[in-house]
Length: 360
Ligand SMILES: Nc1ncnc2c1ncn2[C@@H]1O[C@H](COP(=O)(O)OP(=O)(O)OP(=O)(O)O)[C@@H](O)[C@H]1O
Ligand SMILES: [Mg+2]
Image 1 (cartoon, helix red, strand yellow):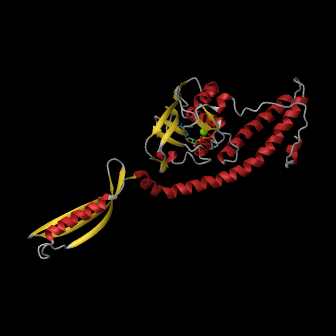
Image 2 (cartoon, rainbow, N blue to C red):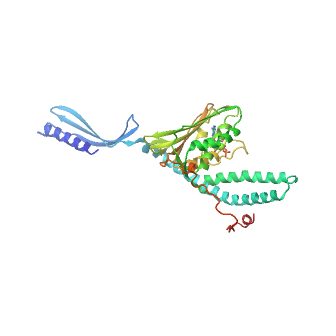
Image 3 (tube, rainbow, N blue to C red):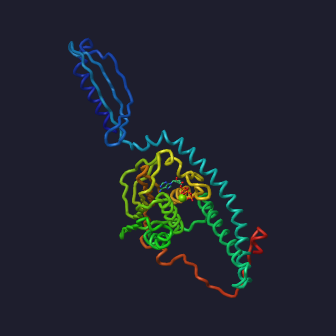
């Protein structure tokens, strides 16, 4: 603070001018300047210079403390420091796995496109009563599932072209609600609570569907004996920067998408690994461990953040915060960006370096 040191100097000047009339009456024995970081109750850090003078004033010892308080700084920066190494390590690991997974997924996707393409051609040529038809349908279904897995890998590795638009998350949730209800067993009480005045967000609609789907399926899996599952949306104003899991979350307006369940919950150890790709506690064949890694990647890509609260035996809550978009009207709603077929009967030039894909 600008006035702090000046005032301090004045105080000392005043003190000295009063006492320093005779050097024998006032004797400065020691002066030290200590820099302290004082943690205040309000979660602020004060960087402070503490000056301690020991004076001998007319046969009395006097201790003089002077505190120069600097501008308060946010605690988060301090708190984030010890964790920054860990975070860097984690993000480098995610980056490396992402690149590897993305590379494999891209080639794999091309191979799947060939399988799906030829399956379609075969299905067209097979009559509805052909005995081989169900077999080809099976091949195509398996290839479709594999393609959706590789899509997830591509999202996670950020190699997918994203098409962000300004949209209303409520609409995305509502349009997937029917499908979600089909995924959930009857012993699960499913509620959706949507804030009617929800701010818009700028993101890819497919990404919101992926977030909702992954969180809901996880919640369902955590409640094999039934329970309650709730999806809720709302506006949140974060007035101050805050620390979440060692990262600094900037202040501002956010749209909150929360998925809560009353399932098994997670212990602390599990919670520290859930966003790592391929981390799963599910049996072989039941989970790939890519769901939350994908959700995490999407949220980060959208400059948002995700919070988890979970208690073993009681349930979990996943809160996804996405920055509110400034633009009020949704491109999505107005139909902007929706490609309409403008041509017919034209010749299309296909350029593809993977020969099998080109012919399929
Ligand atoms: N709602 C939840 N309740 C309890 N545990 C959860 C919940 N959500 C996630 N988990 C834990 O986090 C792990 C990782 O979840 P993630 O979605 O990434 O992978 P998965 O569900 O195991 O497999 P995948 O989603 O790829 O099919 C899960 O295996 C589970 O242990
Ligand atoms: Mg999952």
